[in-house]
Amino acid sequence: MSTLTDLLAQASTWLWGWPMIIMLLGTHLYLTIRLRFPQRKIFTAIRLSVTKDEGASGDVSQFGALATALAATIGTGNIIGVATAVALGGPGAVLWCWLTGIFGIATKYAEGLLAIKYRVKTNNGEMLGGPMYALERGLNMKWLAVLFCIFTAIAAFGIGNTVQANSISLFVNETCGVSPYITGLVTASLVALVILFGVKSITRVCVRLVPFMALFYIVGCIYILIMNSAFLKDTVLLIFNSAFTAHAVGGGFAGTTVMLAARYGIARGLFSNESGLGSAPIVAAAAKTRNPVRQALVSSTGTFWDTVIICALTGLVIVSSIIAYPDIDYTQGGALTKAAFGKIPVVGTMILTVGIITFAFSTILGWSYYGEKAIEYLGGKAWIRYYRVAWIIAVFIGSVMNLTFVWNIADFMNALMAIPNLISLILLSGVIARETNKYLWEGRLDEVYQEQKQ
Image (cartoon, rainbow, N blue to C red; front, side, top):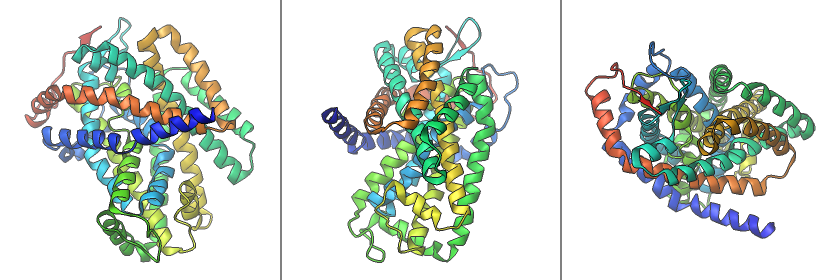
């Protein structure tokens, strides 16, 4: 087991190193240029995300689909992942993480477009879509669609379930002294109450939970930045300088280089916002929308909120706290976040506690839907009930076990998930460009798209 764990760790580290960075960032840049910078329409996209598309077909509202996708995307990576990037790559990693979010908007846009373009309506009126349908119907590559679903169903139990449940139980135990068994039982029970009633139940919870948790965390970070306001100018300068030159502050970060800052900033940004991973379009396909481009725009806001806003704020809080409090050990990795937030009495710890618990819980809900749809594609709807039971049990198990092996499997499977999805994005980029020109750049966003039948 030890040898297998080491092999998986090495394979995961390699996949999430320069190969995945080049593939994902290259796709971001390619789609940004080919689609004529859809990032320019981000404010239109935000407006559409909170506008009901009356008369459109779908299972949930556009905002409901976005909230569910954000629930899965905004996780502990937004808090712990940024700190790890800073610890390993220095302050400059924050800027590279932010830039990844800017360019990743185009990829998330393209994923949302294909989700609607190739989704199908079942006999009972349910919408099904995602990379597997784009691969099967758009490229006639069902074998690759099957592989994508296998990777998704397995990875979901890691990144979307056990590691999130473990984050909750560990943090509650360290902060409040509550047994992981009790936390695991409570978390599993709450998850069961939501997911047993399907996507509409998941969406209803996410629509209420996501705005609260995001707003609470954003306001909390802004408060901490106000407390650290005397150091903000130095923080911004340090982040920008460290992103492009080897830089040290107070003798710290002496071992960091531009390459390290770029590698860890880009890698954590990509892992955080999931642009190119292929997960978010699975729920985007259920949205009530008139045409593929409207939902593509709404989907693109997910990366904007996740990385451009939340990850950036976390980075500013961490780096400004390191400057303000020289006693913080910046090499702590995941513990760096707790040390930085903990420097603000009462409020800092509360913000972090609420952030980690709500972010992790929402991720469990969002990824349960992704896993279900992957299983449904592979074996039919009858298997979903068994998957839900296994999902609830895994929440409890994840709360009380050591997850080194599970995390390595999830990390590895996430990388494998991205490959089929990126293939569909590149090979279908001509379709994406045509739809974008038709609906977005020719001003036809209100036109109704003719849905396909299964």
